[in-house]
Length: 209
Image (cartoon, rainbow, N blue to C red):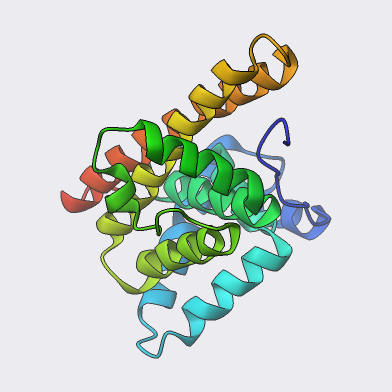
């Protein structure tokens, strides 16, 4: 299992640097928010859904370009921060769907909450079904109720975090390094879950920028 979620390959930054200058933090923040809101508005304005499908397929295959890399520097509970975390989830699942499915099923079996139902995956979920699920959640971001999509993603993260926590316990005595990796993954997923849930609440109040 990878030690951390894979980050997309970064494109050469030369032309990008010309736009934002010498990495002015204030300007980077402004551009991060502007590109996130602009992208969301443009794709959601396409009632045909073609733009959303192209974007989902592109990011699944190529990762996130250098403009979206700016989103990683934005506050987690902001529009660019929420989009960044969603894309990292997509990349993680597409890159290692078998591990994602294993952790999801373990979490689903352990959690006594409605999170698995909210996330919407089958029970049990195959690797291919989890790939389809995260792509469906992203479609909701661009074509459906944005807050609901964030809440589904948060629920998905909570299920996987539970699975990673219990799997870490299983490996603690026999494979301590793997247990440590799983514990770190559980913490990261739990953080994403809280960030996405709070972002959903902010969106409902018209305060997610």
